[in-house]
Length: 311
Image (cartoon, rainbow, N blue to C red; front, side):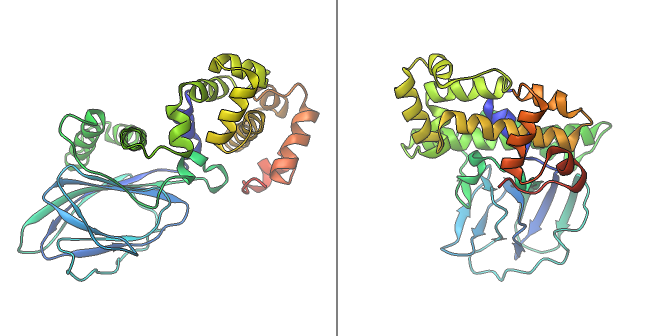
């Protein structure tokens, strides 16, 4: 996979949730903080206000997307002065893949599409960790057409479920997450607010090296060979990669290899020797030593007792 696809596939855990909600004014609803998750809101029709925990309310128009990458709480309301009701259900309670609801009222109706992703706390990639608490992507005519298409398809499936809806909705939720991240990186680049991982993915040289690592983590990469992929000298590549990614090339390579191994330990029955080879270690012994340094336990024990965060 390329780096962004790999990141999304690695960090998601469990089944995502989504809902299409019709809100009739007056209304206000608090969405509580859910650690270890990410969520979004899209206004399909009408308008509303986003009410962050701190700062002024933000107007949200039709087609606008709100993304909360760290699961922090927020409110939505028809007006910045409307009371915000507390949730009536437990956010951690089991829920279906998708639902539809209507909130009774007598005023103008706003229709929203919301969703949430459960994340694996031990595998949250810096791509997500470096994002702001809330991302607001205003609808722009002629821009982000893939994102708008995914929103329309997802809303239609939830409003009118048909055979195969479970698989379609699950795939669309993953697509939506990717399109949101793409749109944010594009907007950041356009407005010269590029830093951190947005800058790394926008940089042709660093992006080429990252994609090489993600597409073939087992390859015996060196700083020199990654520099050749990037079209830079060893020193120039190492300096640029470290500045944008936040760690040297081989440190990132090791971190990603071991994170991939942890995922394989959790999600598959592959033998340790197979996992070691798949992530670039010449022997099970070398792999076990590296894994224990990162996760504080041997791979076999990690597989048996659970998945703590890396050290």
